[in-house]
View 1: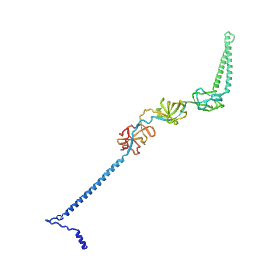
View 2: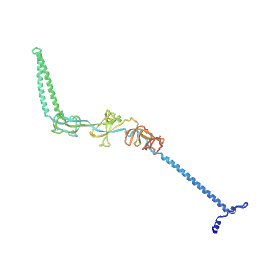
View 3: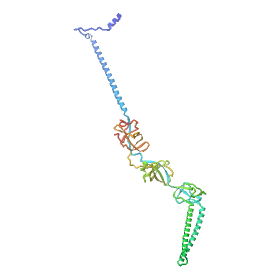
View 4: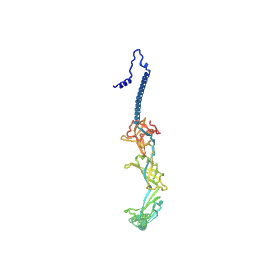
Length: 415
């Protein structure tokens, strides 16, 4: 070490002067040194206090953050659900079934006699009244047969007259013994035979007159001609061996009937006298009213339906036979039910269920569906109007799970 370094070292380190007993301390000679030490102690204490405060604040903040994180985690673990309350009754108390309109009376018109069509008087779409002449048929053969039958009748009547005179004469003579009883009996028997022959001839005349009357074709009831399948000069064959040709087709449309197959589950709606409403696509916004007049009183085992007949008045002819219609039948209000949205249903192996919120916890209850309306369904058992039903339940939903409500629907309570 160099002298200079020794000097530096000596001057940089002050000598420690120990106070001798009975002598004043160094601080008494140097009071500024005591104040410096006290300041240093105060500064060190303040630094320690600040360090302790910082350490305590950091630990407390971390503990508070961990507590808040735990609370948020627990809150996040509780699912939030939306609920609705079931609506009492169903959105509609009716069923809608398809059907086809039919004329109340519908009949094909055939010829009862053979010949040629002489003329026709009505074409398709014509309104006819009962008894109106539709067509005439020429039947020369029938006319000739009728003339012959009438001539035979005249002969039979002449023979009958002479037989009556002869029988009466012989009966007068037998009383005087002028003729034998045998001859008298023969005369009376001949009268009976001639009488029967005359009656047969008269019946043959009446038969041919009826055939001749069939030359004129009449409308059997009030209606509309819906088909005409013949023309002037066409051969009309009424023989039993030939396939008869339909001359006209007539339909009565002032009243129409419909046959509707009602599913067995809705058979209670098929009560005689019940009202029915009809709607058609070609008449949007317009309804027609009918009456259920009768039903088959038997379920079809193949289709499990009940056949019913609905009659509807059609005085203006606005409805046409063969039209496709929808028949609305009102259901009897005998079963108390509620309606819920379709997205509340849970399909699991346990069966059809819905989730309820009770005392802030979930509960799964089985339900039974009545009618399906698409966006909603009718529940006939398992729910009450005051039940809070969970909407869009998750697949992980189980009974007893705590939940929170995201909405406060009106109409009930979560209980």
